[in-house]
Length: 428
Image (cartoon, rainbow, N blue to C red; front, side, top):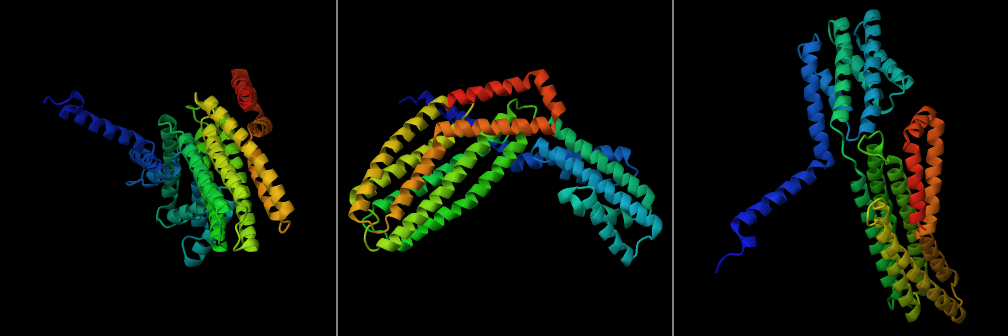
């Protein structure tokens, strides 16, 4: 029998190389790989240039500065580069002053460190304050202080310029996709916890220990939010001053408001887990709810859990072709959940009339699911998004009036407001 064309050794080899190339391309966007390659390139170039311009035989300050200046994002490189140059130059000047006055002794070294740290605070180099003292000690410890000091300044400037140039020529990647994946991952963890809470509510008996375990899991979600926030900050930095991005402000605001909504949902979910735990303590060994009420609450939490994931997908695909379908799916899920919520409200009222004990705890459960539904509502999201865009635009006009006027002349601001209006229409 003849071998199928799709299963031939040549085709298998092609598929193998294609898969390998895909993995390599994906690795190219990995933060560790990007940082390593760009840092090594910048340090090497800085050393080669410093060999020609610096009087030192081994001008290692240049590659060291380039290595420390280059960051994953262009915005971080610019801010860190300027602060690092200020720190090194300040330390060199302090060392020159001390070398002319007292030289190097144990007590002058102590005074040098105190003075360098104080100067670092004055010039506002923030996290690079220790760099001022390090530079001062390295310069003061050599014999030909004057020549070495100015050579160190030159090497520092070379390293900083090369680091900045590498980031301008080798445009850093935009980390919006990675931030979106983190947001969707948080939404899926919220969904899993909601499903488990629903199962506990519908169970014919919920031990207090099991309810408390769900509460502890809800509290651990705070750590996940911290990690997602860090990924989002990196994405926001990658959008600032990046020539590859035209609508950086809109991207940042949409992602940030989306994470804020999920964070509020996480807090409310933790309160819901607390209410269910308290209810389990009061009613043990009885079930938390009657059979129909528990099943309805389980169904409602399942519907809200699906809506949370749809909300995260909508936030992370706000400018893509699938955004409209994602919003329609979210709106449909919220309408279904609202109907189930109304049914649950009637069942809880009837249950409270038959057994008024601890009526405030089931009432709290209803209040908390209402709050989550309100946070996920598309109109609520639109209102918050537009308010945040207005606030950021006002702050930008106050903080950088010249840049704002330039953007208006170039039509960038007008395009932003057109996108703002489009987001508002799409979210209604």
